[in-house]
Length: 178
Image 1 (tube, rainbow, N blue to C red):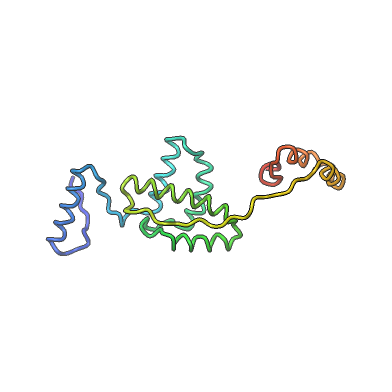
Image 2: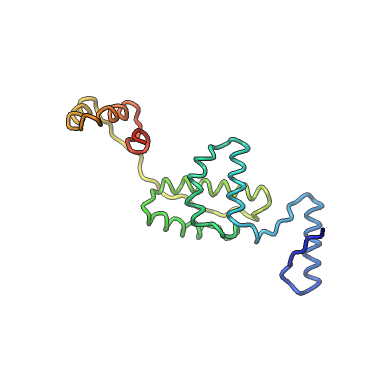
């Protein structure tokens, strides 16, 4: 069955030009995608499939990073996602108290998605999306004597969890108690 698609013009010559361009691209093995129709949702699915099939990243961890991006960018045309759009995303995320480091990890997932789209001919160019300045890494150490002094003031049921965190360097709330 033939597929019908609008060329968004009533000019026959312009419409035939679109058809010639498509036929030329197809004959050269290039994608015949209307770039203005490619949406964020499609790129997110492509990225999820890529991670699942290649095993290059844990799909659950990637989905954790994709979730806030989906909330903001779902429905957007891929070509609309640029530095200014990401700045609006950053403002919204920072308003919820999200750390710049977390936003930068989400930015990495977004850039991977856009690079993949570029490779597959679904995006004409890769936008410049700058990273944010992150907080300085944690510094300072508890010496054994200091730690023991703190333990003496903790309720007894918490001491084993804190000892474990002290020995392993794990975070109490997100890694030990979870």
